[in-house]
Length: 400
Length: 184
Image (cartoon, rainbow over all chains, first blue to last red; front, side):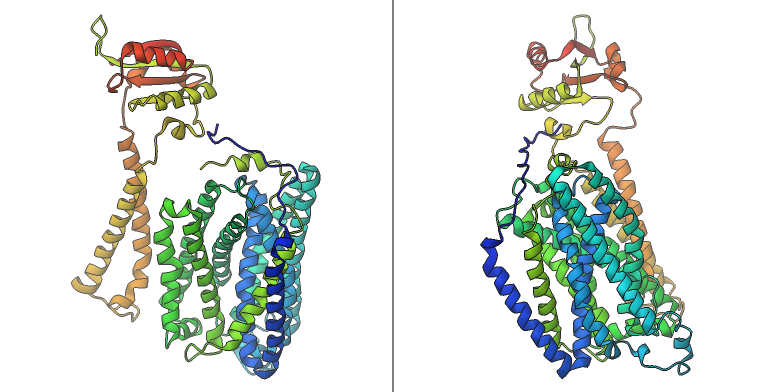
């Protein structure tokens, strides 16, 4: 019943011509190699600082990719129509979790610099001894392998089904992906929550917050939707997906960015207020570190920049339906996600104030360039949208 | 405008065989420049607001107004007593701006509550509800509108309304059973 006349896409789909972007690919590969080599230097020169820097960079990119995985499984589990045209890019970014699983290895190697609880022998601290059943090295390793293995396996399985459907359009694959998604939803919640507990919350083994997993999820979902907007717009700038992704899709992506901007604030404030109100030393130390000295300025920037500014801006429909403006907001949200991870990880090392290190930048560039290089490989392998998805036509005709 | 028998005229109405026909007809009426008219169907038709040229609804403006007034109400009833009228030391928390986290939940809830009230009552107001009777019910065939009937009515108060002109337009757009609907 839509007024818009629809051009049905060619059954072959659109393909990313990697030959057009060999320069960019080569540049990213070179940057990645140099930065990774520098990272090795950093790990030997200043392992203490480097381990925190690397964990910060890892957490930032991991939340972005895990968020894209979340959107893929939600798409299948809810039988969504609108997201069909952008789903392949979600799958491509989620597939980068395989690379991230490899980039987790330095954290395992440098674990003694990061996690103080690993070095304290039993019997020294009663509060830690009561957590030993969970906080011990062998269980930590098993969990890390399980979580990263799940993310890598499930994201690859979904992408594989989806790519195979491109050939024959068999609805069997849609059913199969839905089944994977149903199992993945609870698994995703558990893996992300306990991954956040293990890798980030246990930096300070005294501190605990039951909302921490949800907090990480809220940031991941919102920022990965922002990343999707940036990726889709970049592809459109390069001349792809012009007739496939419309302003209506941008409107929906903008609405999701808005929704998770509010959800992040809701969870973040819920976590803060309960700790602030109960006023228990074990819990408040986390926020005391982050609300004093120069960390206070960054915490305030996060509250204002991650919630108040995008909240006000994204209320307007004229922003959500204008790709260029939405991209500015999306880029800002991704930067705020980076700041969020920085404030979670680095105060554990520099409790007395902000201390930006060169290794923060090197780690960020090393992981970012590696993932960018891998993305350019992955994106060229298949059509840029699922050409034979049974719901593609409905998605193209989207009207909100 | 009145009929020869002296009845006040509400509108000229027509019935359409399908939702698609009604949708196409709506586009014709919109392009003919009519302002006071409406379509009636048993279910919502996707894209009809665009086909009718309705544009953006300003309900959102009312919701914003409701939300902001809820936020301000909460701020006044919380900060007023806690800072000025009856400052109490609760849990050793200060009675100044740094107590604000304790007030956020109420601010949030009143924002949502007033916003929801504004959405509900502004929706009723903008739709002219509650309303016990509608002139369209004076047309016998119109009772099918909750079953399988698709109707379009151009009101007599529209400045472009002329009996012959509208009848011709409705006929051209595929309308059937074209008739005058009385006001009372």
